[in-house]
Length: 628
Image 1 (cartoon, one colour):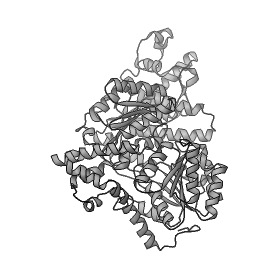
Image 2 (cartoon, rainbow, N blue to C red):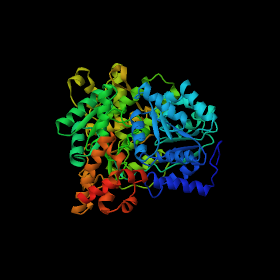
Image 3 (spheres, helix red, strand yellow):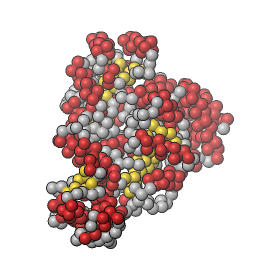
Image 4 (cartoon, rainbow, N blue to C red):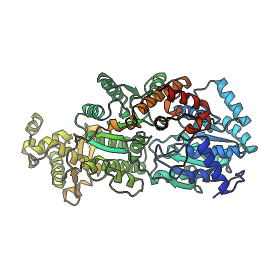
């Protein structure tokens, strides 16, 4: 283990004991989860680390406990670099509830409030300080860090959402690049970088950009077994979404992602019109409206947030029961990060996506029209192709998803393909017929046409457009009469994905042959496709009914206690201006309702109740339990 200046003078055994004591007494958890213990002890001992851990895996504790351990050893403040104001507010609020001295510096503070935080920082009164990368790299803030560093008052740098530093990451933010200054200027202060999503290319970029070559790499399993993955073809998107929500998640909290701001507004209104409590969120909304909508989503139950990808990073709400995509994301990292916001509490959740040919065309066009270099564009195309491969897959979705992140796995039994294996057909002959039609149309008049017209010719449909241009005389007219439009669109998606067909956006989305078309026309490339999955089959049970920790497992008295505890928690959360789960998670309330404690000693053993929360809320919780 690499040790930095001012490292703890504790043995490894003592260090482990301190970290476990903090876990139990401050945060109220009896044991570490997964690789948390190894990460925490390594960082608390002064080691650098790059941590890849799925959303809901407990990343925050991986720097919060080392921060407390190092602060107790006299090593000062931990600086947490976070990109989001809302996340900072909730993290600081949660730490305050646990009795930890924490603060944030961001644009939501007045000048006077920010000055007070800076004074506390320089006095050493703060254990964890959250700040955005833009602030951390300003001359003023760096000068304050210099002053702390000179007297040994910097314990740790924690860089959250570290994928933002990489040009290959799905949420690249240029300001993260400037964080190299931390290593250059404060080389003896340990650093921990954390992210939920990074493929091999992104990991390498994070290591290079943040100069973490000597850091220990911790890669957790990317598997979220409680999430069921379902991908369907677009048919009537909004109606498909409505059926999904009303049949499986009525009354549940969820997130619906759309590609455009206009679509966000339309879908949110549609859901509201159908009696679903939905809110819009996108960068074009007034800032106060956006913040109010986010706060309501976090602090209320059963809200559906309809949003662009501007919403979501750092959202810690544990009881999101579903994430739906109405448009295909750009890559698997983005898809994984966004779907990972469902089921953070470990209970059953759904990741549902609707996609179609136009999604593929749009994503390809955005890549082709971007001003980036060709090498970078090729990387983006590869990532898009991997996502399309996941969407078109006929085998286990989870195996495909985990393989993308370099993790081997077995069929999961909890995705649409495992639960209802799709029928597969050989589309090679259909692909050759389609390419031949594109070729002959171009040969006949030197003009290209869009997908609809090409498919009409292939299927032998006599339309005005076909007859006006004489295309019924083509040798390929009607040779695909046995093929449905749905089948042909599936073939076309595959051909676009492998680069055998190009879509010319500047010429009304017309189809063009490419160098890769030849191999398909010669039959050298096989095209195997799933049958249409536009309409998902009936599931055996309504997923929404098995969502958040179910009071149905309690007897009548237990259910009464649980509901009373939830009502009490909601009041406390409103008073503190915090999401309810920051006070106590549903799992903690369920455990209390089952236990029906009569004393603080009994309550002390419940997971999620640390010393500060026991002191602050213990008597009130006992009162609620008895009164129920």
